[in-house]
Length: 164
Image (cartoon, rainbow, N blue to C red):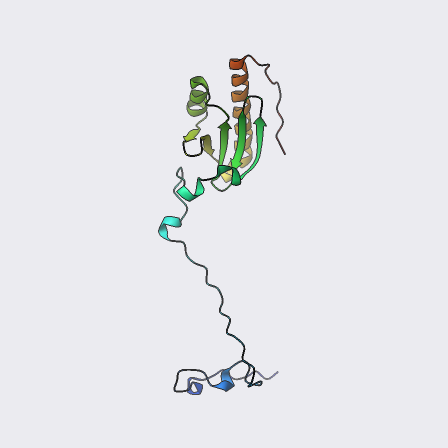
């Protein structure tokens, strides 16, 4: 197989353009193809990089329901457990503000933090222990839902099932 010779620097005309012989359509002088340049990935600016652990970028915190997946809901008492995949966290959202005792339980005993912008409680998820984290989050949400049921005088649930 004969390979075509590479264009030498001598084949560049005085104008700085390659000669027609160097053009990929030199065998068809009347036809010229547009040059296609490979897209170059843009490097995000320093402010667009992933935020440090425990912090969320302002763009990442809006419209929480567009980035959730999998979860559990007790609609009767308004407790919603979801996974926020983009921010690697589990969230518990309430239809109404929970009592001081429930907020204390979630915060102090289970390590959840309150996201005031999205009005939900969250806990960071470590991808290495995601399964264990999900199980614990489901237990916390179930415990909290039963506490709310108790406060309202409703029947306790003995089991829960994960919404698919």
